[in-house]
Length: 253
Image (cartoon, rainbow, N blue to C red):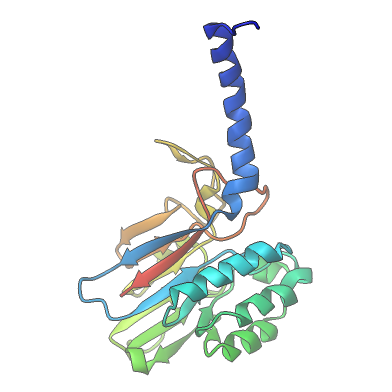
């Protein structure tokens, strides 16, 4: 039996590491859900879930896992900030999963919801059936929770009346739009960036799409209120994630 030399062992290990990382980024991490917690005050009264960028492409096992995780968290309500699908072919199936959420779901559109040509009346029907709403440049009051939810579409927000509730939460897709808001919010939720999907330690995202700016992932304190950018559920362009697992956020406010 031959004994492998130390130099050869190191060489083989160096060759193996990229293969292991590649396999993890392609086959493990893209569906390895993580649940993060965001608590905005010491006397928080409400607890809800935020998820975004589903990009459903037919992986029903993974989609079921996402919905099961949301339901197990037992939130008061759920917020979704765009890109349910990028291909209209999958819309009916994706909306079927939204129906399975056991809490009111409030959502706003992302760029792919527009680009796919998906009919928004279908979104409105399904989101309303959960007890929630599909919000395109409009708001809805939740008087029993003393909250107002504002959903931004592609046009942006027009002027509207002072908040009818103690706290106002904005749902939007593009994080960079926080810089052009004319109103302050108690919380702003966004997606679109996917966290970059591939993040290097001590460096961050290798690349992010237009509409993200410097707000690529996590909590940012801005002049218009705290902004939380979620890493999203799905992937776009390439089906890889590294050091950036898909995310469901539990918010207490």
